[in-house]
Length: 317
Image (cartoon, rainbow, N blue to C red; front, side):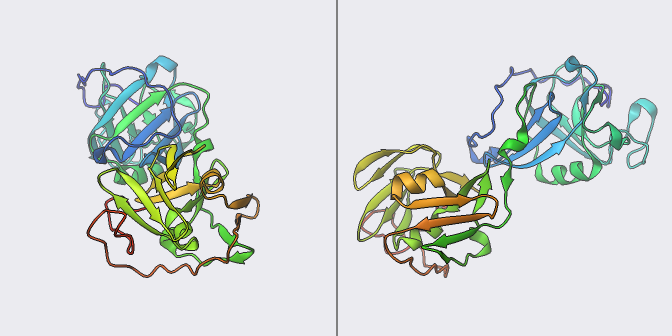
């Protein structure tokens, strides 16, 4: 990548180096996307709602100090950027910037994420400081990213693919009976651990769920128990007793998911994850309820006295 792309100096201050993370919830609604670039492994991770959804190979600086490290933001988006240094027009197959440019708020030069004219360089240390992607990858990424998207650039041994979400279909069995699932409520795995939508599990237990705006919690009620879960929190309650979870509920694309450990610790349901076969087996004391995904009118109040219906909320349990 080329430091003098527009012959401009980007004056935004460098905010400091961020410790690398694999999973961090998004702080607010304006930061639902995030990019992490690990120069040492030449990987770019794209996160949505704190969850890694894509990993791309990249080329970074020929020397480590060529590509800055720290926290930045996307400040420009350009379709078919021209390469002024050699007067190569945008859209030309010989243009080293490729078909798209995402400019970064790095001090001391013009840095960005862009395509390439030499696919063989991807995965190597080759650029003058920018981050190169395969052209098909930058086309996809460009459409997902908005101005202001946070970008963190680091150098460490972490393999981004270790946190990649695997959406290969998972079969869920309850007492050895397979449960049919709708497309919008599909389990997935992350780091070879299964995640199951809370909506599926609540219907198997024949309990009602709603979102409590006052406590920012998901409330569940059945004839046998009442419970409370908070997204991204390891503290929960069951029949009024505080429960510490090994793994918190996860919000992904507006839906709450439970991990295998939460199902075991919180609901005391025996689980077995057959990773090779992509099968999750649940053993329950009673026969599973029919999983019915017909829409239910929204409840207008968020109180435990009105739990006959599923409440519609910005964050869906």
